[in-house]
Image 1 (cartoon, helix red, strand yellow):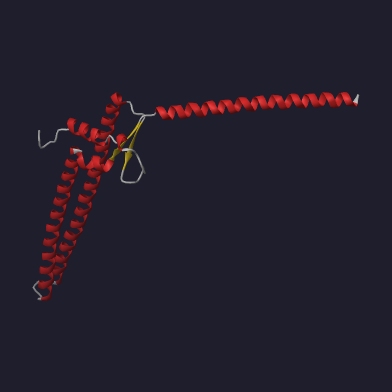
Image 2 (cartoon, rainbow, N blue to C red; image 1 turned 90 degrees about the vertical axis):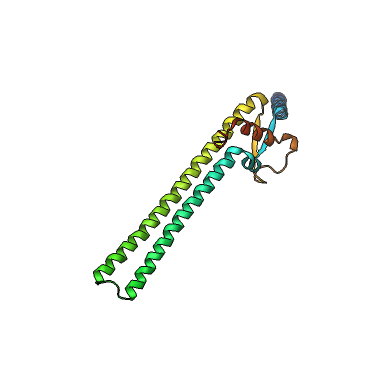
Length: 201
């Protein structure tokens, strides 16, 4: 009787081992099939990259935006410098008059001092306002530029069928890629072809 139990238990154990090995074999086969499908899908991926530094330096819209921002920045700087020079002149005049007792009363000197202090505060407020406007306009321009590039790339890719288009700035993202995957010139040419500079209109 004990021998029969041992025999039955042995057969059951053998059956379990065979069953587990078959399941494991199926799992291995499924994993191998999935890996093959993934590798096959990756090999079918069509990838390209765009050098952002080159694009930004050659895309006429970006060049025009940068030139406009440089001019505005220069105008702000000139305006603030001119007002600062005028304020400095008035401060010097006040200092000279005060030292020479040119004011009829201390109240009159205090009024002039307060007027100059207000001019100084007004200049600081103007500086903050103009700088803030520049930053805000720069952010707006960046969004416009990004939207312009994204819209074009989306349209461009309808005919090219890339799975992925990567942006590359210096060595930030892409350590190596064969130059055949570089579509920067096509993108720049396409962007410039559809952009008409305000100066040319």
